[in-house]
Image (cartoon, rainbow, N blue to C red):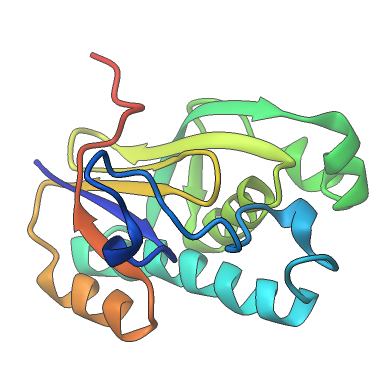
Length: 163
């Protein structure tokens, strides 16, 4: 299995322990309007969403499964996602379009989820806009596409892997 951490954070701005040193960087949807505009936020959010669908395409996947799901009701209401989420449950196969909405809600802190397909592919989300992808293939084309968007792709095993 290949593992990557995909973020908007430049690895050159990390210390020897891997901690990110630029404390001026925005890290959360709640900072829209203070540290970042909605327009800038949505552009970054779209890069993360497209990253997942790019990897899915290279892997030949038109669906993945919801492996874990936690919902935060106040933000779900704010994002007007009650109807969408009423049709989502752990174990459900979700299309690329549904993945787009799940990722958006995850990045906006309305939900937390893990997505995957058998032992071939997964997506995990961490705090502060960290995303982890694992794939049974090397996905070199997807990695190049993602790097061209300005996101950073690092070899890194997800801390959310459970055996």
